Image (cartoon, rainbow, N blue to C red; front, side, top):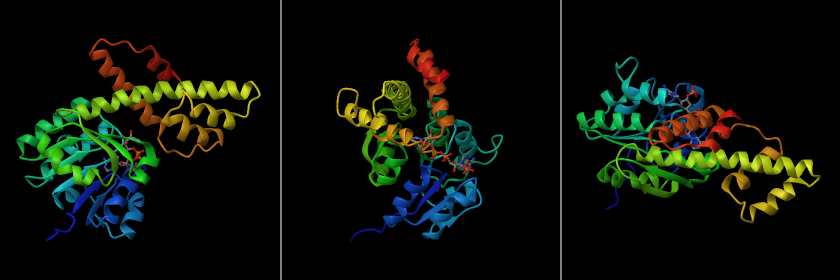
Length: 271
Ligand code: NAP
């Protein structure tokens, strides 16, 4: 006998969260949603998701809660409440699984994991790579930190959102791997922007040059997926600049704590 898909709560229905939540609805999961701005959950509500006015009410409505927020401060507020009062850690049922897919601080992920354990709740940090395209295509790379048992429980959901799912160790290590990813993304972005600026200045058709070099040693996800958007002056946010700056700062903090000097990332941050 096959069991029906479990109810899931999704908090944070922005650029990434909306298409991710939509996959869960499409796959038959009853969905409970909350977002700071209700308007951004409209499409999900039209597809049958149930709206909650607060993160706490949404978290109490199911045993599995996914958060896809913007900044570490947003994560702290949603998990621990305003000035430490409320929050989904207090509202979630014992035995619940909380999965934070925001790109956030590894230390905050460790704090959430400890607080969850004290309350008999499981927590995972599971940030993603692959951009808005990956969220829409369910082809995200998912980097997970936390306990094996919690990971095993989350895998059937992750499989509906991504194509590469890896447990990297204890709480915080999903975020650490994502910061490693963001160092390569940010410094790589400087490289392909500079390359295409010279292509244009030198009288080459930059789109043709982009296509040609994408197939060689310079090829990268950003050059293939982001450069064509930049070249056609499509600057509709797929990934907000303030989020990349946040990631660069988190990555610099992590590198500093290990005494690793990152001159390339410093250039990317300044730009
Ligand atoms: P986004 O569009 O800003 O989505 C974040 C959502 O979280 C927003 O809708 C925001 O509400 C909501 N939110 C923030 N604080 C909240 C709170 N206290 N209570 C309820 N809702 C709250 O950003 P995004 O592009 O989806 O990115 C989400 C995360 O994934 C970020 O950490 C980002 O760095 C990371 N990421 C993004 C990409 C990408 O390509 N976009 C790729 C990989 C990873 P409002 O609507 O009111 O602002």
